[in-house]
Image (cartoon, rainbow, N blue to C red; front, side, top):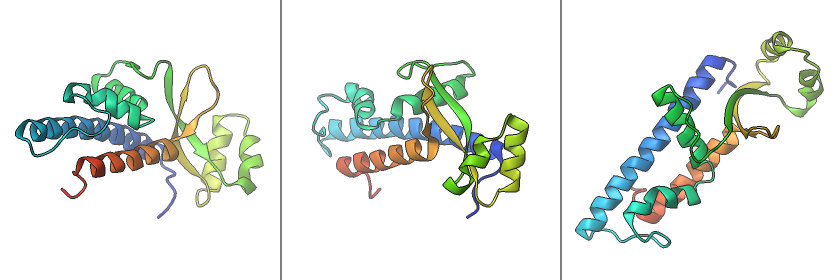
Length: 163
């Protein structure tokens, strides 16, 4: 698998991921509500009512608020950061340590794009998530990967991992 060097693909993949994760939350809530009502499932520990499902998920999935803010902004074409106030999702470039100094030496976006193209087999584009004004950002591959792992645990706990 090649590292992504097409920025547009990276951005739309991240947006689609966020929309899909919100849909997963919504469909899981509906399935759990139905299954609790029919007696096929019980509420998991820490969840007292299916009405509290979204907040229960947010407490279990560290990046869920960011994912929802990104998805809602994308879907509604209007900035929505409820739960992730001052959140920023931005295109970010990553390079292995041996190329780090060369990447850091890029003076502007044009130099960065040239650097990225020159080393396209070793560097990659991703999304980075941060909260303004903090300069510290989390790479999307960490944030979204963690969200997938946490959702996997939730689906297993609810008994939906085999469906």
